[in-house]
Structure formats: C-alpha cells, structure tokens
Length: 579
Image (cartoon, rainbow, N blue to C red; front, side):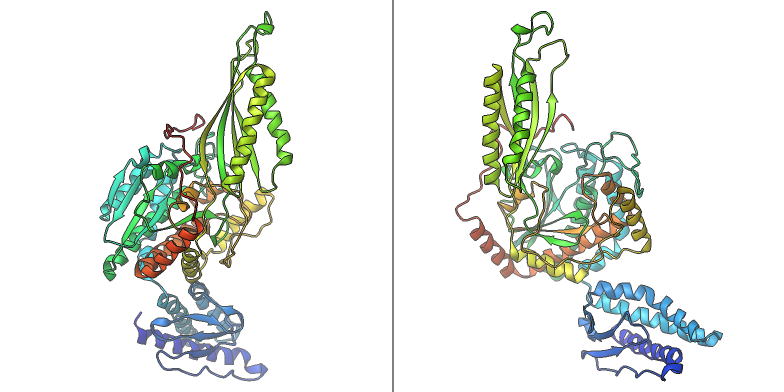
C-alpha cells in the first residue's frame, strides 16, 4: 500500500466510523466529534468512541507508522493487525444495530469497514522489516518443512533425514555447508561469508523416545506406540532458525551489509552433548555472537533459566555364582547398586533446594537364579552452577566407593556428559527483547484457543489457553531444564528467546508438545521466533558496536574462567542404548 493510499484509508475509515457512531448514538446525545486530520509525518489523534476496544489511537504518519493506545499503554503493530481482522465485522454489525439496513447504507458501511481494516493493516505493515515480509511470504514453505521433520522423528545422532532436509534448503540459498562437525555425522555449519561481524543461529532437530502423538489431538493418541516424537518441538526450532538465517542473509545482501551469517545444525540436544562435541571440534571459534530460541508456553527472552547438568554411569563388578546352590561364592553387583541407589535416595534430603537428582537402572542382572556380576545405573545431577554439580558428583563417587566396600565388589564411575549453566548477556538480550516487543506474540485465533483449552482440560490444568502477551524482561527467571546451549554460551556471547508453541502450563518432553508441533499453534510460535531471530541478526550486522559491547560483557562474565571441555579426552559421540 502506498503512503497516500494509506492516508486515504485512514481518513475514510474515521469518516465512516463517525457516521455509524452518530447513527448509533443519536438518540443518546447526538454525533460524536470527528477526529482532526493531520499532515503526513505528523501524529494524528483518531477518536473512535463507537468502539471502546480501540480507545484513543495515536497514529504516526509515513513509514514510521505505529499504533499506540493513549489510555491503556503501548499497542504493538501485531495488535493493530489483530484489530484489523475484526474491524470489518464489528462495524457492519454496528451499522445493522443502527438500523442502516438499506442496500446503499450497507454498501457504504462495507466500504468503511474495509477502509478501517486497511488502515490498521497499514499501521502493522509500516513497522514491518524486510525479514518479516520474506517470512510472511514463505510461511507455508516453512510449515511444510516443519511438518516434514515432524513426520519422520529421529533420535539424537540419527537425525539423517532431518539434517539433510535443512542442509538442502541452505545450499540452494547459497550457503556453504560443512558436515560432520565434531565427529557427529548429523552436525553441520552453514555459512554465508562476507566478513565481520559473524552472527550465528542455532538449529536443533532431534526427537524424543516414546513421545509419538497424533498431530492436533488434545488427548493422548500415539501415531505408533513407543515410537519417538517431537515432544520438545525441535522440528519447529530447526526450521525457524534456518528460515531466519536465510531471511537475514537476504537482507544482508540487499542492503550490502558487511558480515557473515552462520547456521549451526546441532544434533543430539536431548542427549545434552551434541554442541559440546562440536565445540571440541572447533565450532564457534570465529563466531562473534549467537542468537537462539526454544519452543515454550510463554513468549519471553530467557535469562538464566537453565541448570547445569552432569550424567554418570555407575557400574559395579562382582562375582557370579548359582543363586541357590552356592550363593556364598558370589558377590552381587546388584546388591552394590541397590545399596548405592538407596544412598542417593537418602542424599536427596541433604542437597540444595535448587538441585535435582534423577536415576534409571540400566542393568540389574540377567536372571534371578544367577548372582549378577555386573549392574549399572545412570544418574543425573543438576543445579544452578557447574561448581555445585561437581560437588554433588564427588559425593556420588564417595557413595559408590562405600557401596562397593560394603559388598566386596568394585565400582566404576564414568562421566558421560556435562554441560554448564548459560552465561547471560544483557546486550544480546536487549536486542532480542526489542525485536520480540516489535513483532509481538503469536496471534492465536478462537480455534487455537479452543484447542489449547481442550488440552488443558484433558490434563487437569487451568483452561487458560495460549499465551497472548510478551513477558517483560526479567534479570532472573526460574527454570529447572538443562541444555547443551550452556556450553556454547561459555565460548561465545549468546542470547535465547522462547515463543508459545503449546498451551500455558504444559511442559516439554510430553505428548502435548508433540501434538502442538504439527498444529497451527506451533507454526504461529515458530513464525514469531523466525522473525525475531532474523531481525535480531540483521540488527547486529548493522551495528558492530553492539557486537563489540556484547563481547566486552562476555569477557567480563568469563574473566578467570577459561573454557575447559567437560568431555573426557577419549569420549566419542555415541547415543545411549535407550536411543
């Protein structure tokens, strides 16, 4: 829409709304005053009393168009878009209520309704970025890619089709792709090179075991019982990041901005070591800033919401014997593991409130009538800092030694992975928050909200629907999940956001997220994330000073803490047996 056409729609909309307002209020005091017309580039006050939802709007003319509500605070442009959707229906309904029922009168009101919708839509478009436009134009393409990955869920280190699909898209867009980063076959880095600064986005695409679920179903209904599913929404995550990288690079080229866009394809996030092996393999050495996102039930820029975590395999080696004929000759590895596991259960009372311990018995013997000579359990510990995690690991090692001593067996403790808590970066957080505020939350419609509430009802949660607002930035917000993104934040400045892709109160690693990851609620959250990441990346390309400030903040945060890989020197990326 051209600028002059936009002004015409604004003025026509107000004129028609005044007529409808006068007709509907004539018996209660006459016509309302019209809004004053304003010059291009100057703020106008549009008084639309016929619709209390609109309040008093301040409209900026020209390319700086912005919708604000003088009574209720700031309206984002996405709010203007939402208003545009219902404006036509609303004013036609009011015209009918005012007895404007002749064909001519209704035709006039219909034109006015279109004008009002166009006026608000023009406000939204005035604030749109080129990256937004590209992503809007290609929306269906990205939804198809996300659905393609959702249809073929692959577990960590086995994401062959998922990674190949994303690589193919990036290569066709001119990105140079290096595969097998860090010794992981499904890891890759895609680069569009044009000097500094070097801005990277992160893609994940692995699924979770046992979370198969039919798309768009508000009740648990597996597609295939026991099969994997995208219960963390990584089909959305990887797709949005690739879309954002392409959108940002297109704007970089169009504006002839110096700088490089990278997209790191990071496998095995659910096993919590994919990025760690990539770092050990040299990834991120030349990267200056990283922007990331993750599906959630809220719209926010995250800050310190992930815990440090470590996992160990605790094995006990005993001596086999016949359990009935000569049990005194045996030394039960299972007894040792049982004793150790009991010690861990008791230890839980004596750890910090922020800490977590989880375990699973992987091997408890082959048959009841054989004294087992081998037993093994997998144990995870989490807390707000890697130092606290290391303290708990040492306590577990002592407990294992004690259990072995008490049962005359041998203990073997092996660290399988470890990742630290994220290092926050306020400079990059500010970039993401600005763009998230600009883009606004996903615009969920009535159908989306009904779906969300049906799912919440099924789960016994409050029927609050989908998140419809952007949360203000918080210096510290809680969280108990973990991610290997913490390792990336220890080697390069990083910021992360969440967008709503599942109903309020629901969690990841659940069939509910699988159902939403191939449903409009998931796709709409994905679209917002892509827009924020793309615009944020371009912001950094266009503002090297911000990148420098982010790196200076990072240097202060990590001073005296040189990065040391938590991986054992001989560790190789191998998926656990459950995968």
